[in-house]
Image (cartoon, rainbow, N blue to C red):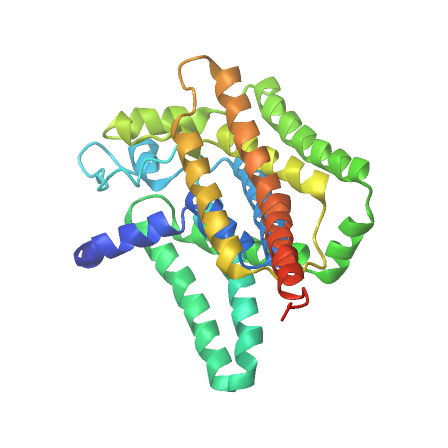
Amino acid sequence: MCNFSRYEDFLALITKAFDPKILFLTVIPLVAGLSTRLYSRLLLSVLLTEYANTLIKWILAEDRPFWWVRETKEFTTLNRPKLYQNELTCEPSPGNPSGHLMTSTTYLYVIFSVLEEAGMQYGKMVVVALRACYYLSLLLIAVSRMYFGCHFLHQCIIGILLGVAMTKLTMSLSFEKYLTKLTRKRRLGYCSLICLILFVVYWGQKLFGVDPQWSVKMAFKWCDDPFYLDPSTTLVFSIIRLTGSLVSFAVVGPVLKSAPLDWKRSVPLTLIMMTIKWIAINFTPRYYGVIIYYLYTFLVHLIFTYGYMRLVPALTSILVDSRVQRNSRPKIN
């Protein structure tokens, strides 16, 4: 990995840009200002992919490289390597599958599918170039994750394969139509079922003597600087964040058809909402107990996801309608 040291800043940028949390707070909401239907499809795919990633991480319970080299008996005190660490290394969740790769595979698959559909009119070479960019992006993410000691190679590969599988499932038109036919009550029921499964897995581990938070302890134990650790990267926090958005999605339902948005109005509105959300997250109450902390996180993601799905298209359509009515009034000579 030392051969990549000259590209460390670039690899750090790749890791930060494709952090699931960053994607969830920036790029994905921005899609809401471009197309409500595309945002609905992308949101559902990413939510279910991240849920699957969380569940599989708990089940497989694999080490990350930066603490594995300290815990394994494959080395002795004399030949045990010391991995390079920085603030990107110390993630407190299990290593397999890679969340960066699994979520990014889903996100990029959706985005590049849209670009590919639009690029078909310009010939096959454009499609080939887009697919090459897709695979190159995944390769760069994998290299960055391995360079910083976050994942082993097989964890990156499994993340990509599972990401593709989840995207194929969630992006299928039959799956989308099935969700559309469900009542709001039934959709909320499925949302509750997902939470119940995760709850059972969490407490099931405790029942069998396994600490579900073992990876957090490993990260604290072997991270060179405890301040590198970010509580928002733990599995429990991810579940709370995802559930807030999923409940909102269940209330609104998948959007199969939506009126075109006035981008000049919808994009600025989306950017304003994204800014407010960032401010709200920065003011998360961290010193009033776990319940307040998680409840606040849940409500922030619930409210803003609902806003992206309902408020943005509603306000844009109102503005467009009023403008059309104003322009259609007969002129008085």
